[in-house]
Amino acid sequence: MSKVGDALAGFGVTFKAMFKKPITEQYPEQPGPVAARYHGRHQLNRYPDGLEKCIGCELCAWACPADAIYVEGADNTELQRFSPGERYGQVYQINYLRCIGCGLCIEACPTRALTMTNDYEMADDNRADLIYGKDKLLAPLAADMTAPPHAMAAGSTDEDYYRGNINALGLIQQPETA
Ligand code: SF4
Ligand code: SF4
Image (cartoon, rainbow, N blue to C red; front, side, top):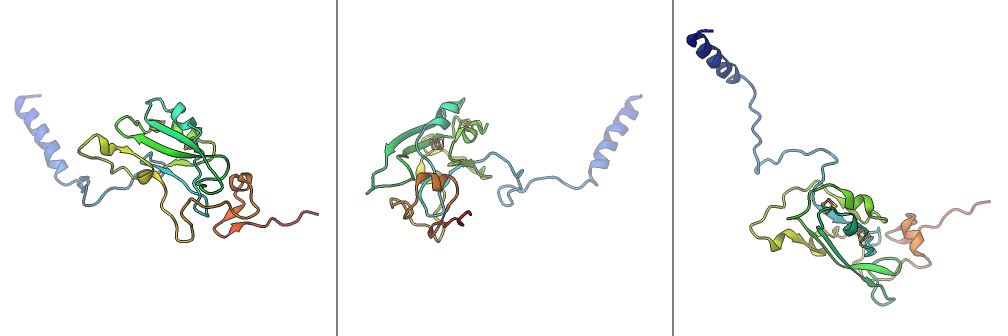
């Protein structure tokens, strides 16, 4: 093709593009949708009565290939109970300077305490604020939840919590089997 032909072909590409619908994302004014299973910021979940699901077992930290999670467990007592069972996560940190969003930590969690949200707006201008602690990771209290520390539901065991036999009012009475 001649040089003139090359130029016309090039301008043709530009001319066709002028009539295409723009695909510019208007971020941050209009954040775009993400895939339903997008791996965003983590969340530490609660049971329906407000107790924390995390038992401080550190399995998530051991599963993390980027060494991004730091956990310190501590014992619950009858006066200071944050989760059902013996232990809770007293210190829980995720370093988002290291996290690669792989999701191995949430697969390792035995109580489904740790899940990932669709929130991806975690940029900051200093390193310290990208280490998220429980203050940023714990799920907010729903209106019918009670902030820990508090006792487990009357008559319940930690297994009732794991099996989903608890609601915000207490132990769900199971129907008697014949
Ligand atoms: S998503 Fe992956 S890299 Fe990030 S904290 Fe979990 S295991 Fe570590
Ligand atoms: S988030 Fe899950 S795996 Fe990690 S310490 Fe808590 S209970 Fe264990």
